[in-house]
Length: 111
Ligand SMILES: Cc1cc2nc3c(=O)[nH]c(=O)nc-3n(C[C@H](O)[C@H](O)[C@H](O)COP(=O)(O)O)c2cc1C
Image 1 (cartoon, rainbow, N blue to C red):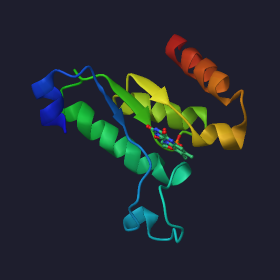
Image 2 (cartoon, rainbow, N blue to C red):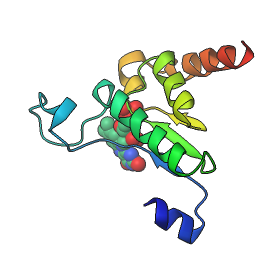
Image 3 (cartoon, rainbow, N blue to C red):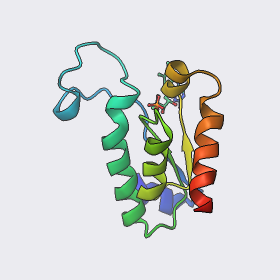
Image 4 (tube, rainbow, N blue to C red):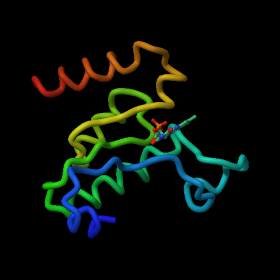
């Protein structure tokens, strides 16, 4: 995918999405379908880190997967994400969750 992005001059990548994997950290999940939320947190961050390293930090990355609190959003930025996206956190934390994360990340930037 990174080769395609470079070849076609795409502006960035959203990494990652839900997973159908049921091995490794996802082995205990018995339900079918795309898994989202907290179980994705670490693997998603690892992939973001991989992409950032492989592209020397030059490709904008929207970091997604398992952002359930401000710390997990910060991890994505630390791994090389330019922006973050969240979905399942809204279900568990409610409609003000995005604003809470944004404020916490802004405070972090100021320190
Ligand atoms: C119910 C549901 C519907 C989703 N629909 C879409 C979609 O239409 N398009 C898309 O790109 N991603 C979709 N996603 C994936 C989310 O955008 C996100 O990449 C994924 O859930 C991982 O992030 P999260 O752990 O914050 O939920 C959906 C996820 C869920 C749980």
